[in-house]
Image 1: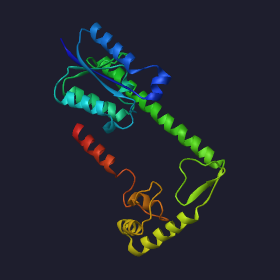
Image 2: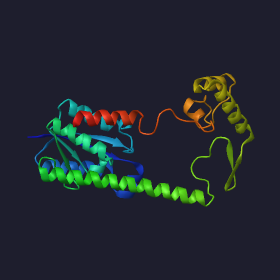
Image 3: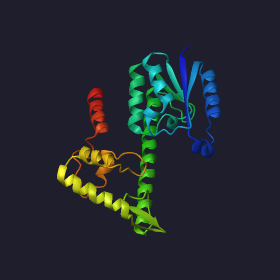
Image 4: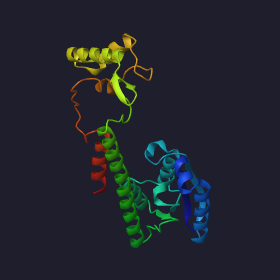
Length: 246
């Protein structure tokens, strides 16, 4: 009898909106495993946690540990998006499961990677989930741009300004800090030196803590980042991933 481990996840908003509570997911997974004659050893849960950041989900990390330890023959989910909506994440997970000889099943959506047809269904759902994720991001960006063009205050108020009704006005005290930061940066050209000066002068960021280099960058007029977009840590990891699986 195949050993199965279940994984369930829900955020507070999803639980209220979609009706896929943890108890609901758990019951459906138990029914599915009984129907398929799987020996369900455990159901790992991430309660009230978004699926956006994998490393912040303790249940998700535990699931990967169980897979690495060879403690399951089958992983069962309520639906594929409980695992992730990111296509790269899903494809990487399925490749890991495949390397370990582990099947991936879902109660909803008929995913069953034990067969080529089941894998095709998995791949299509991974693609559609990624499409939905990008559509939401695109629509949000366009909506924010429209509001900004209409003169609305969008997002957080930038350092150096404060809200005045529906508009922004300069914050004199913060403008002094910005001018000092730019003068210091022109003299030293090192972010750490600017941060050290601000700390020694007891000038704090809005959160009450010392300025970080990342925060200082935003205050420098025309700052040129030495790392182009796509050459950060994630980009390097993706490169290594591509080389490893090709």
